[in-house]
Image (cartoon, rainbow, N blue to C red; front, side):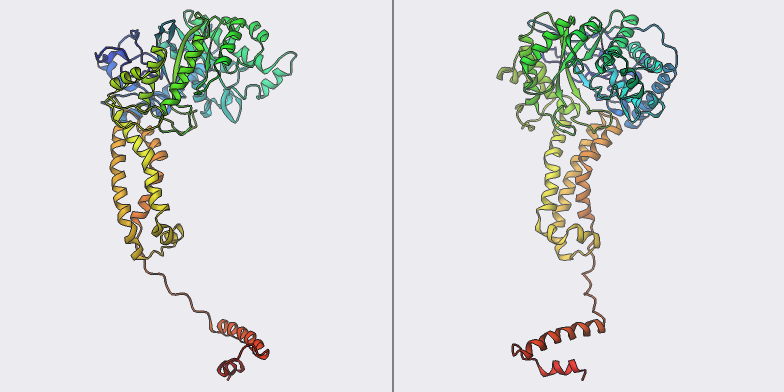
Length: 557
């Protein structure tokens, strides 16, 4: 799967990129100042293939700007591609393992003393390369591969003991490398493997003397990295470092892993511990790792259902990473990957859309390029984005931009800030709605016609306004995303509020409340008799004088 290039990097020329300049990275969108080494496709078939592949991740997760293919056709092609991929994986996973080849997931970013040589923006698509672990999760959630899970109920981890598991990983590596023959690095993932060691085969393995969960993880990393090294000698595997942090230096050094992979240290916090990261780098060097990578975030990581990007958070994250770099040996840092999350995992909702986060990635790249962020750099970013005022400390920017996708950012901001609040203002803080149009009234259709006139016109006007905004947003999103992605975002962020409003507008004015039912005669008599008994007792105590007519009724006359 390939990706389209959406905007030029700060500092690049104004010359628009060629149609054939799309970067050959699986499932990612890369913005680079270095010349792309992609080989362009030829002819009409190539053009269709580029359009098909631009920004598509598993289940419509990919994000890239392209036109000329209808959403329905794009979705059909994506489904066909998914079926072909699963069929190939199914066939390859049952083959005997051949000598392993090497695998690279395209993390091209180097750092020099004066700044980065190459800059990578990694869109974390949760199901597309460059992380082999995401591919594994994507595969393991399907029924035909469920038997390869470490824990039967969870698709988070692969069973490292099965020969078929290794064949599956090999098949995924080969498929990625077939599209990206010129890669230098391949990210094999392997982070947050919390359930490794919980499977039955792993439990048996751990019962053997000196075996530990850490050694199990290291043995799997070594097997995958060896697969990459033997098949693709010019490619260096990258691995997330979180599972490495707690492993003792002696165990790590003796595993042989430091000679096979480069760790990528990830931290997306605005206040990441600089000194702690420097000490971690020193530990990795003592264990034998020659190079390390950093991983920051320009979107995502601040809320699983976040719809807007808080630029200030991500800017601070990058400024902290610059401090780590300045306090580390100059020759240890290979590069930094700016991750952009599409969703937290295969089963979570969408977080920030790519067009919403383009100002953030521009700010973060400029901060890395210049070694900091100043008012002058801010003005340069605003110029590049076509914005007169770019806010970094709030979600709101007072000016529109001219960058690709700026219309989506504007409309998403409107929806995120005002849709729910305006509907809630009408339905929860209007006394006519809360007093005479409550869920109880609506369910039983006991709505007073006069009351409807106090709020229904406002509801009609509000619904008309938001329908127009949503139609514009949907049309803009359909130029960028697959239909299923648009549908998901709308159902999560728009439909709940609009449906409430539509209920108000479409409510029928019902007949007045019917008169209360009259009690049966014997019930009324019994009740009245009881009251008379009570009053007569008071009368006998000289505290109440009863009307003789009532006493006559009591006697039955």
